[in-house]
Image (cartoon, rainbow over all chains, first blue to last red; front, side, top):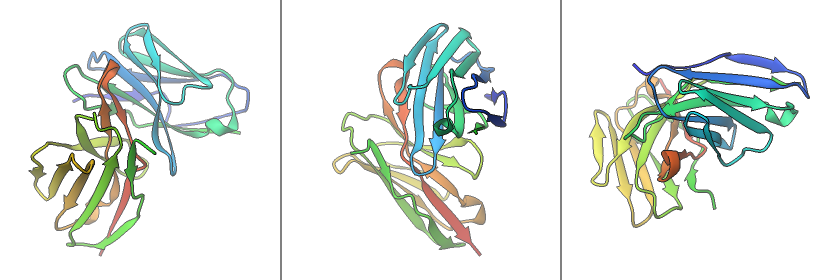
Length: 112
Length: 111
């Protein structure tokens, strides 16, 4: 079974703090993704990575950065958290030769 | 126009009913389609892929209409456990084959 884990289920941070969201997959997948999910807007892609140290911007990268130093780990960084980054953050990974993405349980981030 | 559009619902149906959702997509080059299911406060999980000829998995039937650019999901004999949000991403072939999601359609099955 594919397992994608995220470091926290719930997180509360203050405006201006630097926030790290960690995602780990155990299936040696090359492709990993970070989404945020908001009511009425659905899942929107923030960044993705197709290999170690390789990354590409998704549809809404502003205010975020990512790090992929090891194949199994993909980190999302909020350099200076703002209240409009309060959201559910979902990480996913995808095996080669398949379009199916496997999601982690999500991190509900609240920025106050 | 959004790449993927869905009626957000909720669709409220009694147990045992048949219910259908549509999902329209704007990119005519989209090649692959899926239905994902997302339970409340949980992550999305693949329900089924959608094939050109249509496909069935138990009580679930998925159809693709390329001419009108929509996919559909039919659920027969609805169960309480079918209550969830149903998402229909399309695949943007290219680097990493990104999925583009709509807002999802919420289904509530009641007694």
